[in-house]
Length: 501
Image 1 (tube, rainbow, N blue to C red):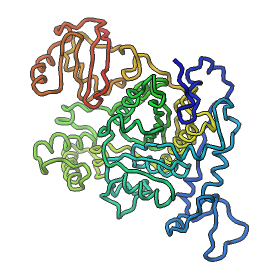
Image 2 (image 1 turned 120 degrees about the vertical axis):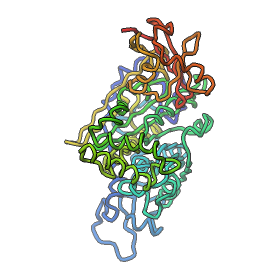
Image 3 (image 1 turned 90 degrees about the vertical axis):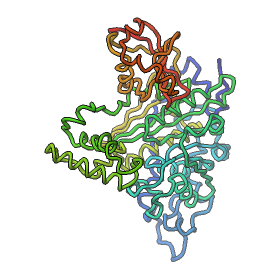
Image 4 (image 1 turned 180 degrees about the vertical axis):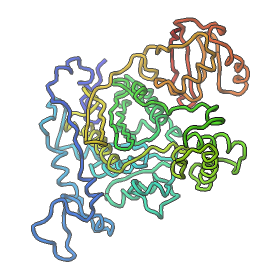
C-alpha cells in the first residue's frame, strides 16, 4: 500500500514506503539549533545585530526582526512584515539538504505553516520553551493541554509565568503570555488531562508536540495516535514529536505512527523508578528517601492528618517532612530536607532551563522541517536525538528500530521469561518493574479464562484467590500466550508469550 504522502503537510510520505530509501544520497541529519528565540528570551535588552548608530530616543530599533522584550511588553513591537522577514528567508528558500523530490514550495510555505494546527502537550519547563519557539517559527494556530496549576517553584525556569500567576492554570497563562508577545498567533488552552479527549479531538491536528515529564502520559498519547491511523485515510497519520529532559541530559524524537518505532517500542530505554521493599521502609530504613517514603506511605495512612494528601499543598509536605525528619533522627540517617521530601513525594525530575531551551529548539526545528520539507526531518533514516551537556556539549542521532512484538504498533506477542513456580501475584508485581512493561494495575487472562481482573470489584473478588496460586497450579504452560490490560492504557492489550526458565 502506498499513501499519497504529499498530502501530509507537504512531507513526501512516498519516501517512507519506498524501498529505495536506503539509497538516498541525502547527507546525515545534523543537529540544528534555533537559538534566536532563546537568545532573545535570555538577553531581552541586547540587540542580536547591533546597529551602526544608536537609535534616536523613542525610535524603534529592529533586531533581526525582533524588538527588545521591554518594547513588546509596551505593545510597540515590530510590524508583521519586519518580525518575519528574516525568518521568511529561511522558510522560503531551499537549502543544501532540501530533497528535490520533497515537494518543497517556497512560495507557499508561509501560508501553509499558518494553516497548520499544532497541539502542544505540556506547559511546564519544556512546554513553555516549545510554545515560544513554535510561535516565533511562524505557526499561527496552536493548542496546548496541561492540567496543572502554577507553583512558586516553577518560576525559576518556566519563564512564561510570574509570581502573580501562582495558583492559575499553566495552559491559560502560557497561552495568554505568548499571544501578547507574538501578535497574530492564536493559542487555545485546555485545562484538563489528555485522556479527557477522544480521537475526534486529536484528529483535527496536523502535528503533535510533547513536552511531558510523565512516561505514562507519553505512552497514552502514543497509543492513541497509533490507533487513529486508517490505511485508507492518509490524514489520520499525525506525526508525534516528543522531547524530554532530565538535568543536563535530554532527547528529541520523531514518530510517524505505525510506520516508525513508537514510544512503546522504546520503553525499555526509560528505566522504571526503583521500587523499595515495604519491609525496608517499615523496619530498617537506610537512606533519607526511605524515611520520606515511610512518612508518605505508612505514617500518613495511620494518622490521616488531612482528609486527602495534596502534594502541592505546603502544609501537607511540611507534615511529611517533619515525620520523615523524626524517623531519620531515630535511625541516625542524615540528609532529610524539605526539598528532598517534596522531590520524593512528587517524583520531581531535575530541570535546567538551558537543557529545556536546547531540546525545545530541536523539537520545533523538526516541526518546521516536517511542515515545510525545507530539510530532511528525523523519523526517516534517524528518529532519535540524544543530548548530553554535563561534561561537554554532545549530541548523537540514531535510528531506533521498530519492534515486531511491540504491544502498540507490532503484530507479535512479546516473550516474557517467568518461573513456573512463582505465584500470579509475583508475576503481576514484576510487570511494574520490568522495563518493557511498567504496568501499575495489570489484569491478566488467557484465551479461555480470566486469571485476575482489577475491575469491576465483583470480578476482582472472584479472581483474587488466583493471586496466591503458582503459574503451574493455574494450568499455564511454556509458550502460552496471555493478555494483560491496564486501566492507564485502555486502548492497548499487551500480549506476552510465557517462557519458563
